Length: 500
Image (cartoon, rainbow, N blue to C red; front, side):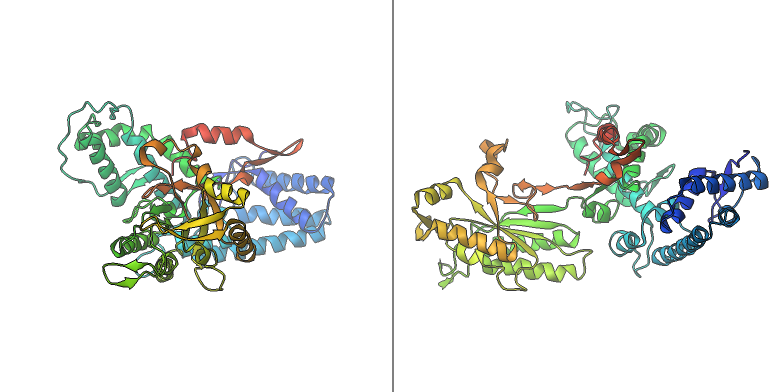
């Protein structure tokens, strides 16, 4: 058969003719009618290709709608009326889906990335992730989102290129005269003013350490003449990982890469000391993090217990749980103007006098709904539990013993509340510090990110991403297999899953 080399898509673009797409569409119609006659399927497919060959030949360029018309004719000629009906319905459904996608994205024509996402996925992207102008109108689509993210991620590769980066720090510190360009474009890689601001900031940091071989102006010339082309494959690989839905960085990266905020980290641990100033500083920092789509973890164990004296005022303290309400309320307020609700992890050490109140903090519906809470358990507690010794609760303000409780009763209460409400969880002090390489220099870690995956020091952040394992599943002659080679290749391609 003399099949066409190209086909015209609905958006007017000319693309290579792919007969597999015809087979896929016919197969879906057979599946929809529970028709398992593989011989009939292949006959319909072959007849369609013959019709295309006779009508258009090798030099013709059919429109996609013309090809679909020929599929319908082939199914009818073979008396596959139910399958033909299913195919017509399939075409109609696809048309409706295309129109809904156009409406969601505010587009007249869809590109290949728009088409690859479901309607629900596009609704989520449009409501949260795609950039909008001041009137709320979308100014980018999914393709531009992934280009924006991939371009920012590639900036670090460019600045650490061995041609311009000296890890020894033996270079002169260059005088910089500011940004100058407002945008740079290479193929479809687009660096806007915010990309360039980040690039300039990183350049300045490395330059101050004597690690830049080129001045800023020389670096820009290198970038346009050499750097862009040299690192274009890095950009393309990261872009394709996202478009193929094999990997996505965390939400703040999708929100903020290449924008004014620029925050890529998802979650932070904040310190809090036993003073109103420290508590309010933590609240302010939390609000800034929530604004850009991040979350926080706080260990409240440094705060004096409820009922303890406050020397500066002559009053009494309200305790850690009461101050958790500040962050909980703040999270509710900020989420009204942010892109998503902030998340929090509240941690209290098991020796704190308010531990019983903390354990029951989420017992009433509607309270602390923006929090996960966890009890930090030390090895000493298990010793007391095994020996059936009373467990002392210690005031962190002065180290005095506040009271003693039964260790078994305390653990049973934790278990009961976790069963009833899902909280509290447990953070094991010895486990999170067993392999902590900084323990001797910075002391122990006592907090985690909001979901507990990552133990962190104060002001450290976690940068999570998602590997879509389903995207690495492939069909072979032996059935369904996991494509380990593809996963290995992607992993090695440029630390793709570790970048964010």
